[in-house]
Length: 334
Image (cartoon, rainbow, N blue to C red; front, side, top):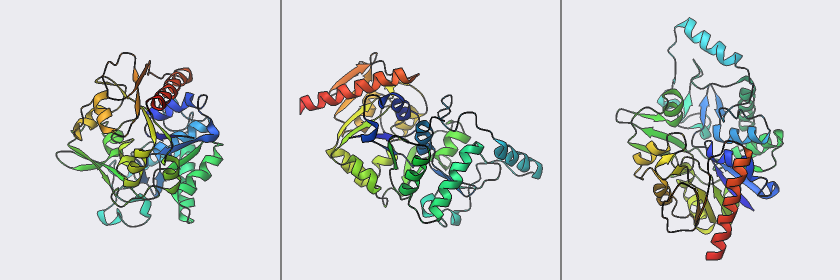
C-alpha cells in the first residue's frame, strides 16, 4: 500500500509517473481540502479535482487545473452580467453570518457567484454541481469524492483529508483572506504575516484518509508545505498517524530556490526557512527525502538525489523511482 498526500500541482505531477512504479490498485490519494471554496452555492475542491481530472485523462496540463479544452460560456456570461449591472468584481464574500450557516463543509469560505472570481469551465462546473447535489442528498465528502472518482474511472482511491471544514486563511498586515483570494484574485502579491487553518482544531480525519495513513507507506510530493500539506498536518489525528507511517517527502525546493508558487513566501510567514532545510523542519515525521541533484542540503535523514524537475510523465517516473529507492533506504536504516 502507498498513500500520496496531494495538494496544488506538486504531488499530481508526481502521480503522472508514480503509477508505473506503485500499483494503482494499492494506492490511495489523500487530497487537501483547505483550499476548497463555495462559489455561487457550489462546493469547489480544486486539489481533489486536479487528481480526478488527471485520473480521467482530461486534466489541462498547461495550467494543472481545470479540464482541457473546456468552454467558459457560463463564466463569461457571469462577467458580462456583472459589468452590465454595475456590480463590483470579486472576490465577494458572503456576509459573516452566512459564513457558518448552510453546508457545514463550506464554512469560512463562502463567496457569491456574482462576477465569479475563479474561472470555472462549463464541464468543470458540472462536477461542482454534481458534488454539491450529492452532498445535499446526504452523502459525506468522502462518499461524494469516491462517486466522482468512479465517474472519471480513477485507477486509485481518491479521498479527502477530512469530512469536516478546514479553511486556509492568509493573514496580511491589513486583513485576512481565504487562500484562493490571496492566490487567484491577488496573484500571491499581498504581504503575509501568518496562515491559519480555521476549523482544524475541531476537524477529524476522514476514516478513509486515516486508514490509508496508519502504519502505511506515505509519499509527500513537492507540494507547497504550508497551504497544500499544512491543512492536513493541522488535523491532529492525521498528523499523529504520520508519526507511525513510513514517510518519504520530495522537496519543492532546490536548496533555497522553489520550483513554483508561493511556498517560499508562505513558509517564511509561518516561521520556517524557505528552503529544503525548512521543509525538513516542517516534516519532522519524514523518514527520508528525495532532493534534486543540485541540492547539497545536509539532512539528518536518508536522502536520495535525482533531477526533480517534472515536465512530463517520464520525468515523474524518474522521481517516483527515487521515492521508491528512498523507501528502501528507510528499511535498511530500520
